[in-house]
Amino acid sequence: MKSPYYQSSTVTAYHCRFQEIVSELPSSLLVVSDPPYNIGFKYDQHKDNMPDEEYIEMLAELRKFERVILCDYPIETMKYIVPALGVPDEVVAWCYNSQNPKRFRLVSFYGCKPDYTREERPYLNKKPSKERQEYRERTGKTGVPLYEWWSDIQQVRVGKDLSHPCPVPEALQRRIITLCANEGDVIFDPFGGSLTTSKAAQDLGFKSIACELSESYLREGISRLAQQVSSTLPNNRLHLDVGDSPAQQALFTPEADSAEGKLPAPAPRR
View 1 (spheres, rainbow, N blue to C red):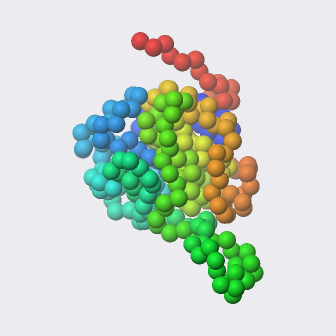
View 2: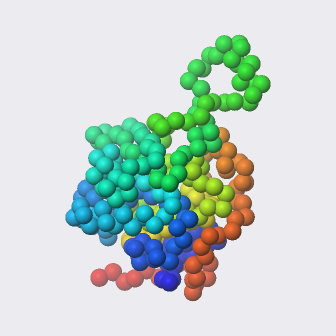
View 3: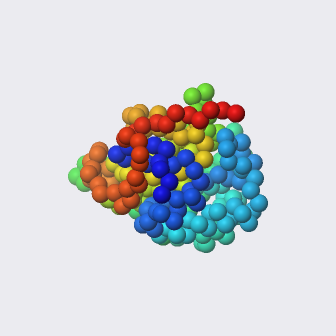
């Protein structure tokens, strides 16, 4: 088994393509990922213009896992994800403000469905009737369950401290994990990027595994793991139930030669 690039009590990160370790991973891992879009994006290492058949074949390797959740643009979802994994069990539209034409993405759920009762959205009616207000006070309700249209999470503004060109928001990954993960799950992101999914999983008290081809993205992500939660999702019942740092038994514990959390020296640039 390949040695991890980084390992802590909650996060294990590999500097490699996920295909190099996929055979060693249990099928019970919950896959949550934002794969490369294959539309010519300028990533650090990955070439985002793979032949269609090769790209679909790569995504199809995720069929090994019982539960897979992927976020992508609508056309690319139909062009790549559906041919690779089939028709999803559930689809959510993530919508956001943008100056670019592509203003929403699809979150496709395979082998699982989001439990919308785990999180509420605020009531739209700001001035409820007396009877309705009494009902809210009596039941303690502050909103209604989510549904398949998310417009309250905005894109990440890429700044000088973040070299990854298109990270998804931590709030998006936290919501997906909140709605789908069960206590004791280990989250796996085969396209780890700057470890957004691992950070979200850690914030919610879950262990995670990530693979990433770019060392610079990994190092940025590792530095983010020590940061406090930047924002919280309202009424996160799963988080409230299991606590901030629940003791969980890992489904997969890779071996590491280095001490916990130790970063290897960066390879010399050529």
